[in-house]
Length: 119
Image (cartoon, rainbow, N blue to C red; front, top):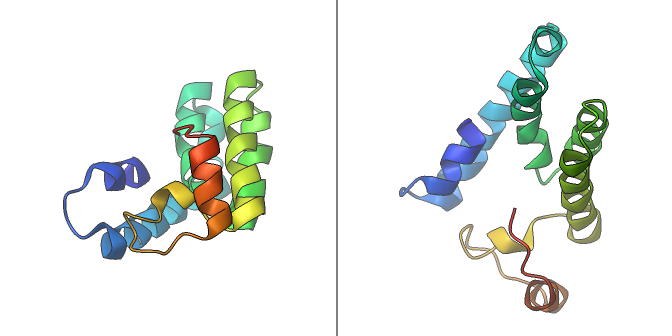
């Protein structure tokens, strides 16, 4: 939930977003490490795994894909694959660049013009 909240926060996103996202990943890892996710419904588990899918870290993306695949919901797996493909290609989510005060590369701009898929 914390990582989704950042999208709607009206404060300094460039400064706050990475901090809140890190907290969300830490809480999610703790829940997984303690096996709490195994007692949850698929929807609840998916929610716990989203901070990894929303991460710009390649290892987090691999973890998200692995965890989400195990849920057996094809649509969720497609979203995880789409997120991972963007991180594998760019190392970050280009659609966040403006909000995080980052310069976009020519390749990122072309990608955004070509496919304005929103997550």
